[in-house]
Amino acid sequence: MIEIRFHGRGGQGAVVASELLAQAAFLDGKQPQSFPFFGVERRGAPVTAYCRVDDRPVGLRTSITAPDAVVVLDPGLLATEPVADGLKPNGILLVNSPRPPQALIAPAGVRRASVDATRIALAHNLGTPMLPIVNTAVLGALARATGVVSLEGLTRAVGQFVPARPEENRLAARDGYLGVTVLPGDASAPAPPPRARPPPLVLPEGPIASVSSETLHTAAWRTFTPVIHLDRCTKCNFCWKFCPDDAIEFDAKGYPQIRLAYCKGCGICAAECPPKTIEMVAEA
Image (cartoon, rainbow, N blue to C red; front, top):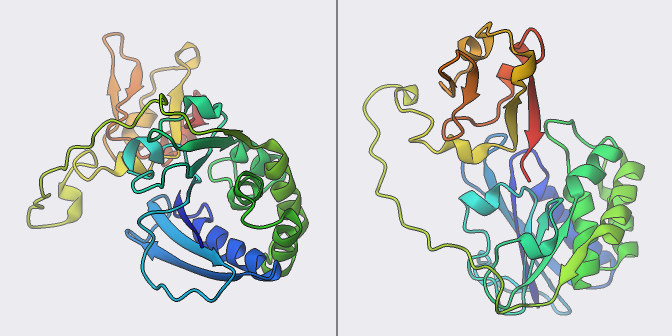
């Protein structure tokens, strides 16, 4: 049996990715199982999904705590979520990232792989520049990195079960298959830093907005980061006026700058900036 855990954000297609993988496995003549786990059910919040593939009927009904493969649809989760927890020795960590796999932080002995699924999705007009739908490109990369399903089975599943833009999604799966880079397990690979368990969060009475977004860790939802091009900034302060999270402060010369601990990447500042000084850049 092969167990695969998907980590993504609401709206990226992590749940659909696990379902498509199961359908592809079934078309390949295997016995799959797929199900999601939802925490905060909203766009941009972390989402986990699971898939098991075997040659025999799968009897387990538990979440996957010791996966053979971990698939990360958003590289920002590497810094905010323990995505590699429980990954088996010689398992594979596949990340949607433009960075080479040797730059990924993973447990010792784990094989690392990366694919620029965001670029592939945008090239095929899947999703929007603010929220590209990367799941089919990542699945193509997973098919090649693990052999859990064939590319033929995956493209057939995409054609049968993806209602929107099936041809573009098939091409994205093919490009992901061709574009993935895999490294062998390396005991000297950089290991994730130990994670301190935060104290329980005690919320005051009243609306949830009475607690800062930094306290609520909404910065972990960010998939795009605003970058201010100060050479075009007119100091109109519209970014500060419209920011819902108090994530804008000013330097000694009066220019705005982003407080990343507060910013959740909503893009309102970029939309409201009159001279279009602010650019939303995908996190690598």
